[in-house]
Image (tube, rainbow, N blue to C red; front, side):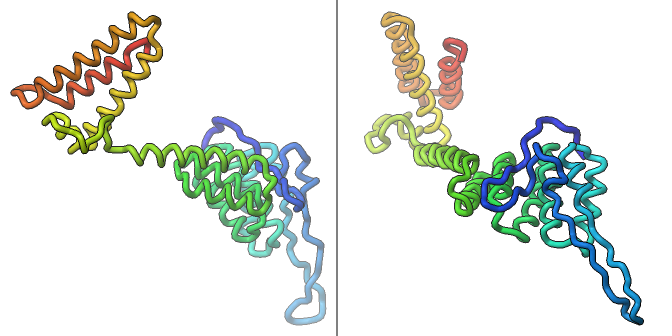
Length: 270
C-alpha cells in the first residue's frame, strides 16, 4: 500500500443512524459482532459450530492506521461469504477510509461504492466518495454525491459546504465556457483584417480577451496616474503595431499577442 502523504479524517456520521466509523472512538464501541449461533449437521443430529466473522480487528487496525494488519484483517471480513451485511458495510467503509488516507483513490472509491450499494442511506460515505471524485477531477460525480448526502441528511454541514463550493466552481467554469473563443471586442463590428482574423480563430480570440483583462489589471494596480497613463500608452502602441503590421511578410500575429500577454503578466511580478 502506498506511503502516507496527507491524512484526512474518516467520514463522521451526522444522520440518526449509529456512527459508521468515528476515529476518535475505540473500534470496540462501533463493533456490532455477530451473535454466536449453531447449526445442525446435514447428516445426523449433532450440532455443528458455524464460523463467526469478527469485524473488530479490521476496525481496530484501520483506526490505528496499521496498514499491514488492516490489509489482512479487513480482507478476512470482506472476502468471507459468511460476513453479515452490517459488518460487511463497516469493513468496507473502514478500509475505504484507510485507502483514501493513503491516496489509494480508485480502490477507496470502489469500497465506498460497494458499501453504498449495500446501504444507500450513508450520507457520510456519499460525502467522502464525493471528495474522492473531486480529487480525481470528476466534478459532476462529486456534485452528485454531495447532493445525495444532502438528500439523506439536509443538515450535513460538510456535504453542504462541499456542494456549495462545487456549485460555485461549476458556475464559474460555465461562465468561462460562455466567453471561450470570444475576443474583447464585438466581432459584428469588426472591420479591420486583423480583427476579422482574431474573430475567426478561437485561440487568437482567447488571447485578445486575456490581453485586454491583463491590461485592465495592471492599470488598476498602477501606483500613480502617470504610471497608468504610460502603461495604457504601451497597450495603444501594441494595438497600433498589430493593426499596421498584420498581413506583412514575417509578422506573426499569434507570437506578437503571446509576447504582449507575457509582458503584461510580467508587470509587478505577475
